[in-house]
Length: 130
Image 1 (cartoon, rainbow, N blue to C red):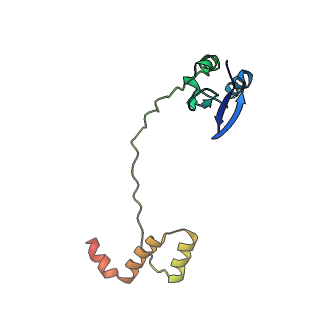
Image 2: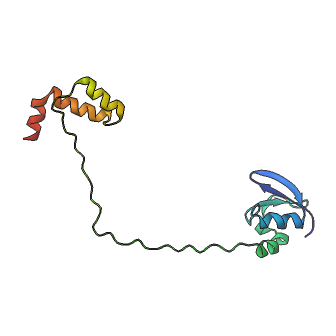
Image 3: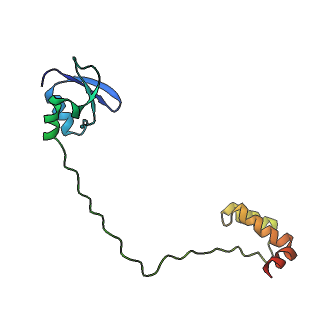
């Protein structure tokens, strides 16, 4: 390999590195085929895979892609069902009790607003149900 290479590792320019150091970087995964390299005489930075002197090193240190087996999931016994939730208006709830339910996370402010509409305007809500 003629000349030492500068290498971009984690966004930083490092080097110059000789063949022994480049080999170590390939072995420990610090450098891959898409790592940018440069050495004196090159017009610009290039990917290691496009530099002939590094191509042979890359081939000898190329890690085999792990084969991932994707299994098809078992069929469900029944399709998933959407569950509807309903807000049941309280029979008798004080504003303090309602506020406590909101603070405890038992109900959301939006749910509390719906509950209040049942308490404040029961005749309007009763007509909606008919």
